[in-house]
Length: 485
Image 1: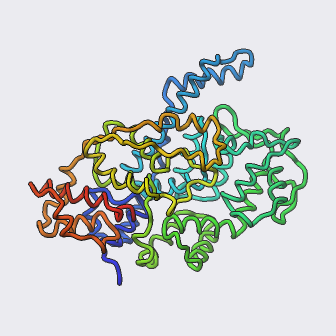
Image 2 (image 1 turned 90 degrees about the vertical axis):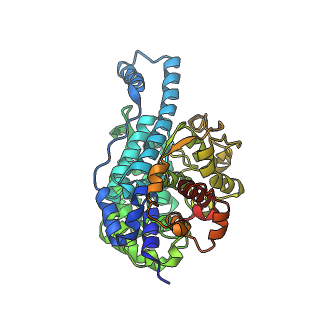
Image 3 (image 1 turned 120 degrees about the vertical axis):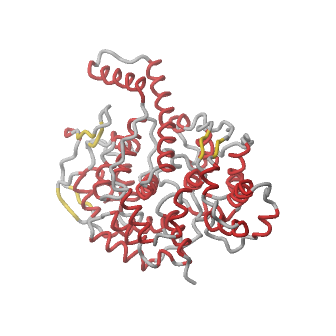
């Protein structure tokens, strides 16, 4: 059975973005999926603005630290260093909320959705807000551009070099961590290289470092200029040449495409589709926008088996609710608590492999919390739960920097928002009363076959048309079916 036009568009808006905004609901009935995708592409072409949340105070402390480094005689006091660390941690939270708002409000939904994917692919934790800002800028600018350019830029970012210990990778004391993760997580995938390839690649990355300003620095006296052999190629290989050699392997295109397919299409991979997509991705010299077009304009993307079965990640769920219900939160910090309680804090991936996604988002406690969120927002309730400690994912080895990064996110949160119900209700002003439930279901849910309309009506507030629309909406958003897209 083929899907209706609205369902196809609904599916597209959730996979290629964070779901339709309330103002876009009318478009779902009129535009074709091809027209809608073209509009998503067009609105994502602009270069994103750099997100700078550091602020004057932290800029001043940073300038002082850099001056101290230049003079080598003057040092910041322990109190100043502590203050800078504390401020940086707080600013990373600001960066989290700034990017979150962009996901909610931006027309560049396709770009921000891909940036979220790359945020998990190039997973990185760092207490330095300048490093995090720089890495996020790379991901957003290249989200739909060249994977080749993005790989090189990320590999030379201060955030990643620092996170993967390449500052300690020197010719006399090689550190293989960076080279291992570049092969295992960024390009080839586990099992497609040898331990010797890692050792040799690590030698090529010796001397790659970053200065206090977060700029890439090549320290030539720390670089191993000897002959190396990586995946069959021999020579005095540089780090850049190793990255290009990894990109020359079709396995890299296959690994990236497979991961994209699981994120954007279906957790159950169709290997034939992935092979077709990856070959075209490789032949395009890793142009991400072409790969996105191949996916979102194909007929099979709209097959029933690929719709309504994606468990929304915590960020997708929270952003999607705010896009449908325009709101002003009284306490924006409550979003950080919700991210932590649901298991996905931006800039705080659980480990170097990023968030596993899929069924891992749901367990008995997170499902109950997910279903309570719409009512919590309306009722100004305080969450009486404690966010899960994810130290288990670090096998008990979470370091002090990690603990500081999430410090304060365990506090209970009062969630209160002023919702723009007027704008929302206007979308249903011309809908006949007896068709309201079906219309709202069609705008909110993908998996609607089990919805009992009469039961929804029975437990709805029918004092006025506006109360009814509001009541039905909150009920539907509180169903398990709303967790799927």
